[in-house]
Length: 70
Length: 432
Image (cartoon, rainbow over the protein chains, first blue to last red):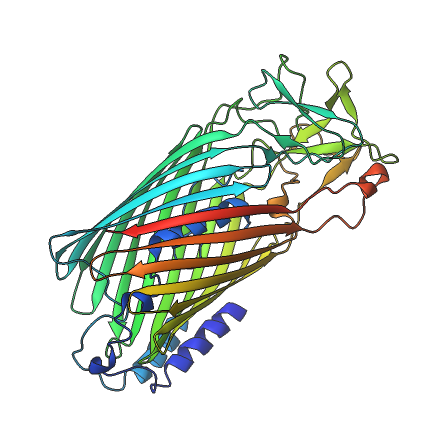
């Protein structure tokens, strides 16, 4: 329930409608380093380490399968 | 009702919908028809424990303006000792290897490590992204991961829909995976007692499996011309064999804290094989904020996770990409992770209090990865990026600090049951 309230809260912030840019204002956002996952191989390697060493996984994308041994 | 609220909120946000422009996410795709290839290699080494070498290569081809395919191949070579879950003792202790054919000895006053781990993993994944309409994209994915004793097969579908002049992207997806494990020496009996080398070990079957279903719902929102954020909610359901077949729990004397001797001839300590529940439901909330600061890029994320094993965790991650020239950057990285222990975490059993052999409805593990733990990562990356290629090198230090049990009987009070584990990582990336 707390999660739902939080998500709706965030969504309602996004709905304030002042957020966002015009199409011609996207030159910075279009840069590769501004992509949310700008280094997917690094993210994948990191995720695999932490998946193997800690009790949590996923979040950014799917947690997926695989062995968590060692 | 919830969907109506979300729809209403987003409709309000979409004050004026124009035909717009590029994606919310930055476009890093290659030219049409050409393969865009990226490679990385990771070397990971723990002090006196596991080390791993992991090369990975990925390729993406933009077939046309609304269709692309991606392929990825990962190799993972792993070797070195790993904590077996037993407690240290003032005396050396002997344990039987998972195969049942040989043994290893842990020195006195050291957390016992099983040195038999040596594994190679090959993983392959492929995905196909296709625009379904002007504002909607679908990505279908498949992956296969194979180890000597483990096979994971998975598939996923993800939809992304842009609204609000493409300032907002709604993501929804589901993935399904089926894993099969065929461990060295078969699946142990829950709380079965480890036997000396060459005798019959307490075993159930040769193989077991589990299924995983993940659902992900997310929103990506452009805030202004320099920043954007995303919020993801993930639900994950795992069913089947979730136990680690190689982990054991010590049985100790209630007064002295010394491990009970199972076999005096071989000096084998009495340990039982762990048993975890056969289902786990996880929820996580992931938020990420990314901001351009005069050419530098700040990337902050936070994840909150909780599950029905009563583990909760907090993960904070911070990267700052410092632009030092038109082609070079430095990027410091900090990560903080904290988790509570699983409700069935038991560092050891006092003799007479352990569950009966085969009690599959009782759960216990001494695997420190399910204990109360805090971890820290600090790293630094240097990279150079040109028009058509780039490379970077990163060094990171990782420290795991596990909370010691509040009550330790007898000699265990002088022992460190869960010593810190630290690791050094070196990673090299190359974008062709």
